[in-house]
Every structure is written in C-alpha cells, then in structure tokens.
Length: 303
Image 1 (cartoon, helix red, strand yellow):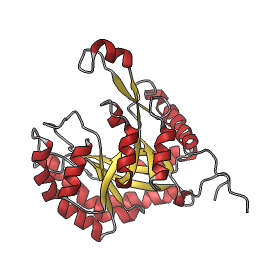
Image 2 (cartoon, rainbow, N blue to C red):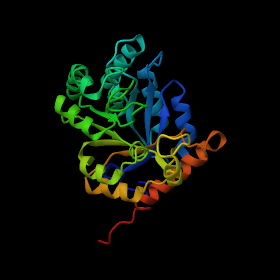
Image 3 (tube, rainbow, N blue to C red):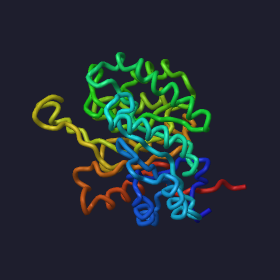
Image 4 (tube, one colour):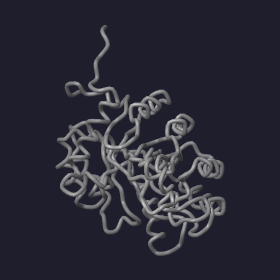
C-alpha cells in the first residue's frame, strides 16, 4: 500500500469518467499520475468498432501495479426504443454485461431508456420487457446494473432517453424488475438542478446506490427570485466537485453510514468555467477536494 493511501478495497474510491474507445488506455496513462483511484469507461449509444477484449487488455496493462481500478462500464442511450441507434445501445448493454469481467468490474451502468414521448408509467412495461432479461443475464454473470439519474431534458410526462430520474420512478422500476442486482448510479447534480435536497434522498436510497457520478451544481438563487425557474436566465449550472454548492462531506458521510464502498467518479467536461485548457485543472482540484471530504489521508489507529 502506498504511503498515506486508504485501504481502498474497504473504502470509497475517488476517480473520473473516461470516454470508451481505442484511445482510452493512452488517456488513462496520461492522467493516472494525478492520483485518480478509479476510472469509469463510458460509451454513447454504441460500442462502434471498439474491440472490447483488446481494450480490456490494454487498460489492464496501464493499471497493472498502480492500485487503480475500472469501477464500471457505461452504455448511455435508449435501449427501450427500436431505431437503429437504440438497437445498438441494447446490444452494447448485452456486450458490456458479458465482458465486464475482462475489466475486473462487476458493474454496468447507463440510462434506463424510455418510450419516446410517453410518460414514465407508460414506459414501465417496456422497461420490464428489456431489463427483466438483462438483469437476469447480469445476475448469471455476477454483474450489477445501475441507472444514472439524469433526466436528459425529460420530465414525468415525456422525454427521449431516461425514466430513472425521480424517486417515484425508481419505485416503479424496482417493483417491475425486483432484482437485487439493479440499482442507481446516483449524482447529486441531477437533484439539485431540480431544487431537490440530495441528502434526505441519499439517506433513503443509499442501499440502492452502486456508483456515483462526481458532479455538482451552482444554484443562482438571485435569478430564481427574479425570474423563477422557467425564465430567460439559467438558474443553475453543473460544476466539477469543489466549485459548486454540493456538500460532499455530508454526501460521503451518508454513504459511509449506509455502508457504501464503491467509487465516486468525476463527470468532467460540464463545468462552464473550468473548461477547455482548464478542464484537467478543475478535475484534479475536484479529485483533491473529494479526497479531503472523504477524510483526508488515512491514519491507522494505535495498536
């Protein structure tokens, strides 16, 4: 174990998300020295021509001996619909479930999908039809499934990508597919930008949280007081942890109390200030901030 390192297998790792493609190993190699402890590899709508076994081998070579891990594989799109891109997304879910073990992870994440233009309740039968078999497929391979809670611009009545963005939807989903290996890829930003207090929600749902996206929100209360939430001025914008209004010390406290031992992976490329040339500056600051919120350097108890 490295000096001052946490006993990570019994704790909470802090890492970042990286795009999934054949350039992923080189990207991880460049940022690994900054201290990231885990990496979530994500794909958008399709695996494309990515050679997954080759990617797994090359990533393992980069991570070998470092103590860092692949926390999860992500397939983001709409697996409930039937357009060519949607079918690609569903095939991506199946492939990542089957090959997660190659990366040393037991977690595949993404959007739940939804029936386009329909309400969340009207999407539940299709969700059950698709994710009932996927959850069973995953269970047989020792894999868990987690749904990110981003609305992707949708609401209760309509949307394009995801129904898993509201606690009432989670109840419907987990009732429809009552498997212990499906849960949440939770992110406080997607609660705060809807003016939901994330702490009581996390306290209630923590045992269904399998992974976290590390992203925060700055809320402009002066804009809300003047224009409301549907006015011409944006009232909230997403931030890298450490730059927004989330209290990550409280979030990690609730995670510890709830027994969570997974990863918080920073979801970068959203902060409107720490962007472009400042992207990694912001992410590394977020990494150090989250480590401090985790408790700082590990100090062993006296014997």
